[in-house]
Amino acid sequence: MLKDLTIENYRLFHKFTLDPIARVNLIVGTNNSGKSSLLEAIYLLAGKGSRSYLYEILHERDEITSKTVVSESPGTISGYQPAHIFYGRQLETGRVVKIQSKLEKPTALTISFGETEEDGRGLRYRLLEFKCVQDGAEPVEQSLLVREDGLLFDPDGLFANPFLVPPPSFASPEQQVGFVTTNYLEYDELAKLWDNITLTPREDQVVESLRILEPDVERISFVSRQTFSSGILLKLKGEGNPIPLGSMGDGMRRVLAVAASLVSVENGILLVDEIDTGLYYGVLTDMWRLILETSVKRNAQVFATTHSWDCVKSFQEALSEVADDELGRLIRLDPQDDHIQATSYSRDELTTAIQHGIEVR
Image 1: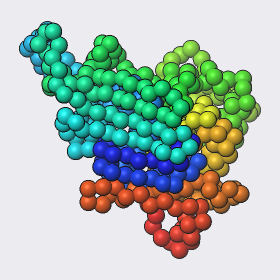
Image 2 (image 1 turned 45 degrees about the vertical axis):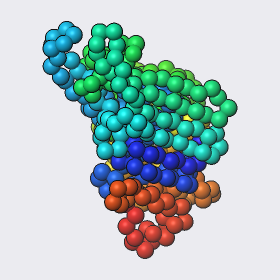
Image 3 (image 1 turned 135 degrees about the horizontal axis):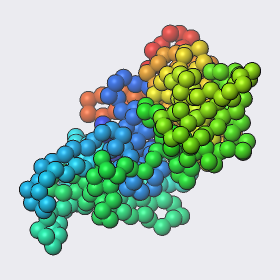
Image 4 (image 1 turned 60 degrees about the vertical axis):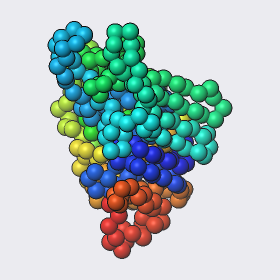
């Protein structure tokens, strides 16, 4: 579990420190204050230097471009644009992203942009190098190629065209981290998670979460029709036939994605961007109660973002009901000149702020 975090030169973060960090963290701030970028930085660090995590982030942000080339095989090529992950959006030799956590199990990830090299065909590239050092483990090192035109390529030829070969899924039961973005997890992503959940106690936890929105939910099932959500069926009390998840509204899909991801990252980290998307404010306290309880049961750490005052108040209300006053924290990000400042509120500080009508978002 992360106890602190330092970020340098990643997107909006020139030099940024977050300390302390709780088990469950709600991140707030104005638009363009770095909330989603903070989740991405944690995701990359948890990925321990795997370049596939960067592909997922660039793909989710649509940081892709197409270029017409006359050398090599003439035509149009498409690729990812790695310049966007660097502070100032500049690809400069020697520029380095650093993401690290120094407490518990110290871990440090660096992403560096190297000198120009030339292959046997006269094509010029620079290396984007990943190095992760974790206490007690061998360093992990990987690299990607960046062409002169700024496009990203895998040395093994994978994912050269993001429109032909999609990146690995955010939802993977093999990972120690899950990332639920503002986009809905599609059928195959949820089904992959469900393979490791079905017929286990975790299935009961997911069904319990769906009852926040629909108390009559008894069971959930996945069938072979792999569309957006029509292959996910619910059994409701008193109903003779199963009900497609898609007919239950966006909130049910959101709760399913969050709950399935949370029970799948035992001893790991769950990241949720705009956690209240599609949810009625009246159910948010119950959602937070379930997240707080499940995070302890699964030994999972949660980082979520929101713009909603209702979500903040519901978070505080749920926190006030637990005995552990260090279980959750509110973290506000404030852009100040050339850096982002973090202000952290404990449970009691958040309660005092809300009681006095102090704006904490």
